[in-house]
Length: 99
Image (cartoon, rainbow, N blue to C red):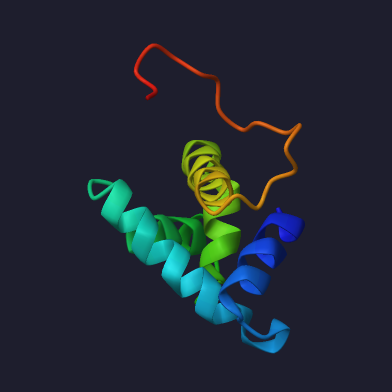
C-alpha cells in the first residue's frame, strides 16, 4: 500500500515527513464512505485484544481484514479518480452501472 499512499501524497503535495496528514484525510474519507464503521472502536478493540494502551490506527485497520479491504478499495478508487494509475492497470471491474 505504501506506493499507493506515496502517489496520493505526491499528487496532493504532502511532504513525506507529514504522512499523518494523508492518513487523517483517508480516515475522514473512510468515515464519509462507511459511516457505520467506527474506526475508533476498531482501534480500541485492537488495543484491548493485544494488551496495548495505544496503537497506530493503521495497525488496527490492517489487523481487521474486512476494514483493511474497504480501506484498500477506497484508496484504489481515489487513485483511479485522480488518474494516478498506469493506463494498463485497473482496480475496478466495469459493470453495467458505469457511465
